[in-house]
Amino acid sequence: MPLKSINPTKTKSWLKLKNHFNDISGIHIYDFFANDVNRADTLSIDWNDFYVDFSKNKINQETINLFNNFLKEIDFKSSIEKYFNGNKINSTESRPVLHTALRANKDEQIFVNDKNVILEINSAKEKIKSFSESVISGNHKGFSGHKITDIVNIGIGGSDLGPSMVIESLSHYKTHLNTHFISNVDGDHVHEILKKVNPEHTLFIIVSKTFTTIETLTNANTVRDWFLNFADKEQISKHFIAVSSNTEKAVEFGIDSQNIFPMWDWVGGRFSLWSSVGVSISLSIGYEKFAELLEGARIMDTHFRTSDFPKNIPVVLACITLWYNNFFGFQSHGIIPYSENLKSFSKYLQQASMESNGKQTDRSGNLVNYQTGQIIWGQTGTNAQHSFFQFLHQGTKIIPLDFIGFSKPIKGNKQHHNILMANLFAQTKALMFGTNDKETDSNHKLFKGDRPTNTILIRKLTPRSLGSLISMYEHKIFSLGVIWNILSFDQFGVELGKKLANNILKDIENQDFNSHDSSTRNLLNKYLSTD
Ligand code: F6P
Image (cartoon, rainbow, N blue to C red):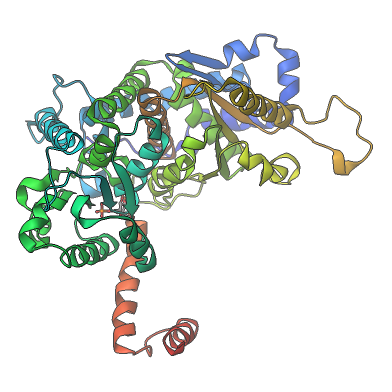
């Protein structure tokens, strides 16, 4: 059963939200605090290792009640059940969306076309586990008998961003293996990576769900050719593995069928780090830590599936975004983690969120006449403070922000951590209050405040808490897609550019630019005529 198609703007609750917006949008956030002493307690959620404070927003209890009614009116709960139960909610591709099954308990039963997919997932996990253990322990040897020291993940989009972000975030738990990522079809970068590794002790993982992505296949071919300068074809099986749902193409490329880790069409690329796509994660931090990451995601799945709205973290965050995006007209959203480990987190969320919800067509196939999608961007604090925070404090655009911080540092350096976290708390306070309680002698020094933030305070950065954090955002993305009445799990918007690039590549090879507009023609002529 697909998701229902309900235009959110035509609901009774939307009209009520609109009237409520007219009533409260002019109220400064600090006035909400002044009028409600319990605000921070009622507008926050304490769950597991997470404390989510959403009180520094332009909302009050009435906003929450109205959103509660809105979610009931669109039968939001039934959408969650369809998602978890494997209904074909990716309607345009007629597929279920089951990344949640990848982290479900091993004795659960989730059926796709009458087959319990948990059994296949369990056996893929066994394969990841035993392979990781044999590489980490040194049992798996390269062609000259050396153990593996380096792994190179070759993939792009979801076949790169998830694993690279997680490995970077959890570098503290690293095994002896060095990990490298080749994603862009930029030959200079491939060259730089190959300069760093020795073919005798390097394992290459080609990750492509479709095994047709030109960037990945070009990179994989270049790397294989480079490898064959040092070893025979028979040695490829010791150094190349693949993760793909297209076994035939992977075998055609030269991967031993034993070395192919499965992927399924019911896992979207941008939600695939929990699948065999995470084999680089398992190699990098060990299978047990990988399993903890999955467990962290699973407990957030349960929270999302079972908690009622005002205490359901992903749904609350989704409603706040909807509030700003569709009522206030704030189009972008910043992600500011106060942990250098999370420096790629916003980049990861860009794909997860913008490839999912950058859609203009509703679930009935009609073009929408309201805003969808969020522009996601960010940088770690405190670096971001010395970069674009000027804009956030005094610019004319309002950017709602998520501040992510940890109560405990990984290595226990309290002095640094206190400074780091004092900055986080100070920024959310400054953004909210501004200088409204003080005299300013010049408008240049004026901070208007009233700039909304959520603070996600987590006990410590661990595989488990990271799993929960990623899962939290995945479910926020899903919730927004449901509410906006769009289809979050296809990505037809990437196709046109791919097609044109293929055509232009042929034209470059044939040096024939006549079919192009004058701008493209001039650019291509200039490109080819440069010595
Ligand atoms: O950018 C489009 C896309 O299909 C992403 O959704 C996906 O993560 C990426 O390309 C890579 O695809 P594949 O894993 O099939 O190579």
